Amino acid sequence: MLSEPRSGRLAAWGNALLAGLVSPDDAVLAIVGEDAVHRVEGLPGESAPVGLTLALGRLRTLGASGLRIALPAPGHPLGLSGPPDFNARALEAEEAVVCEGAALGLVPAVYEAGPAGDVHIEVVWHCLPVREAPPADVPSLGEAERELAEALRDATAVLSRLDVAGAGPVAEAAVDAYRARAERGRELLAPGYPPRAVRVLELAQRVGLLISVASENGPGGAVSASEIAARAEALRPVERTARRAQVAAYNSVVEERGVR
Figure 1 (cartoon, rainbow, N blue to C red):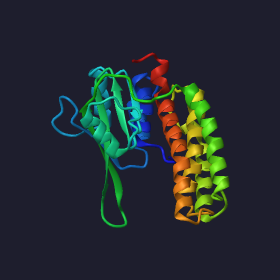
Figure 2 (cartoon, rainbow, N blue to C red):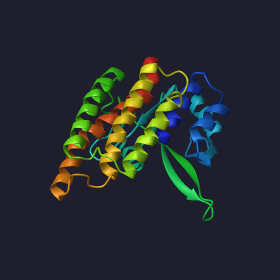
Figure 3 (tube, rainbow, N blue to C red):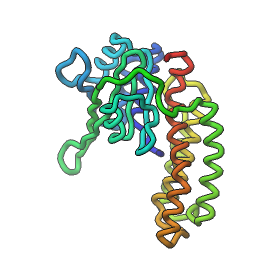
């Protein structure tokens, strides 16, 4: 939850490019981030994988007017609308991008390449047909913000009750990572996004921080298997709320433009 999903970067900077707010070079640089290279495979009219610059331009000519993200999990097809093949691939990857106006979707496959000691990440986005229908379970920004405030209180209470919110090197590292990310919050979203979307995304990451502490900081005070299971059960709806808020934030610029 703390790391920015690749689908989020692609949607955010792709939307900025479609709106004419950034150059193709700047958009591609932001989307690729620390990865070595991104390619798109299966794009209509292309027999081989192509680079992101060409792919984004081609999607525009195919009618794409906006990009949304999906962050599905088992039993929760968040942001998806079908068909089953696309949903299954997105669920396996735990993320996807859906193109508004073009009935196409992109699912990332991540590969490690290079010799030991010099390994880099390559990403291939598989382009597939999608069903033009409302995405599943995506809240508005206002709804997401209200739900997150409640989720943050719930998560804090659960961690306090289970004695998980204490210290420890993993917890301290998670806190440091969140603080570092929050200090450069302007980088969270591309130009064109409303300030509320940045605020919601930051809060979603804060909730994600607490979930990460609970999941990665050992058993804490929950010394029995039943207590560990209780912790996971209590935090499951909190994690779901945080994912919904992330999707609402990344998709907000499309909603504001009235793209359907």
